[in-house]
Length: 172
Length: 70
Image 1 (cartoon, each protein chain N blue to C red):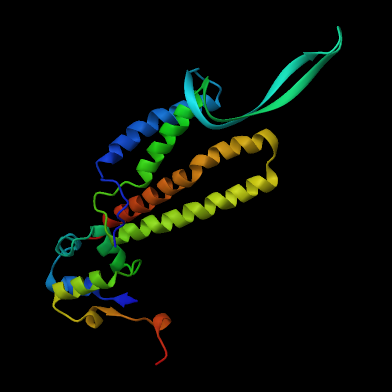
Image 2 (image 1 turned 90 degrees about the vertical axis):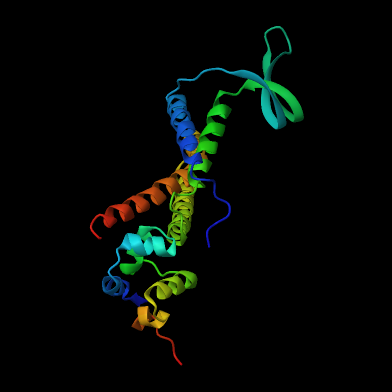
């Protein structure tokens, strides 16, 4: 009954080694400490509003917004935030789907319960966000929301395992 | 579902750790079963019965809440 789609236990260290720096980078990014990494990237879809200044007459300036829709084009952009998001997501996915040393059916059950719990909490929080949070604050929370399901799962799963292990001390 | 795993273990004089090794699970699983926090799979229940040389019904029994109408 053990899930086939779990990574070997050894990978867990890699997960933590990747998580710690990307988490720190993420926190710094949120407190506006950012670095610029310009790089060409393949944009499968890149939609942006471009504002251009139009001189109609000598003193009459008009701002014109044009929508540019690019498909499968190589564009150059700052990819620092993309690097953070990718490393953070990969590390969280590793920590979520890595086998425990003593993975068995009871741990599989805790895993499933935790995943259900994390999904429920995440979407309740998302609903509350949609109802009560607006504009830029909403965008900020949506950025968090990309990671919260996995983070909630990892916290719940490990807390339950820890409490179980602690209980073992009292028994023989 | 209730079980008398702890009693059976005491009779056979083996620790949670030893039972866990015999049936290939973690000690946490044995502990969770003894505390009735976890209902084992049929495979695991059969393995446990085999270790103690008993029938499953001698170790695991239904509670009032699980009773069915026959």
